Image 1: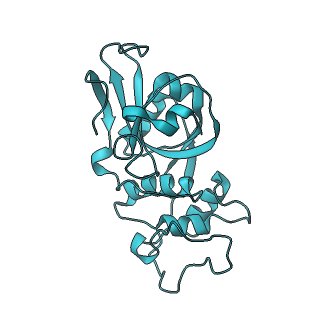
Image 2 (image 1 turned 90 degrees about the horizontal axis):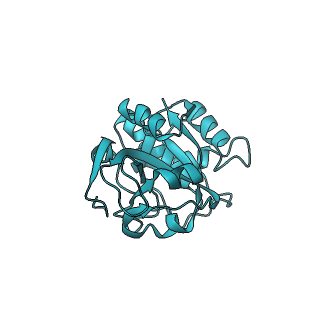
Length: 218
């Protein structure tokens, strides 16, 4: 991943070991994608984001929520990705939105716990090889991510899930970003055209303004 700032130091960088960047398309599956990235880091295999999204609808209406995610990972788990590949065109409101009989597992399960969403807290989790799943409000800077950088104090709207895969530190001031400020590296699920190849560096100021909370899988 290239970036605008030549003077940064990586505190922890898990990009070399994470799964490839996904593309959720127009579907609201960001939480399933981010959680799958985190879960795959734990079990070292490719898992089905589609199955996780389907299974998260317990109780009914919980799909796309942390409650649904907790239930799905605890009770059903995730099968290998090849058993139910992600499809941008699937209609999850249809009665036919069900896994095929060929989805037979094995099913990897996990527990979910709240995490410290501060840069220092993220470093602690990443140092244990846990990829936090962060829920952010989407800002204009996040939508555009020029040069792979998300900056500004806009608090944003709505909520969007991303996987945190690294934290870096500014070694010298650049523009309004001071020396010593940290940059949170996230893997998004909007395909490789977002940010730089699907990754973005969120400045500490932008992170503090827009982050809602973070969880980790164990």
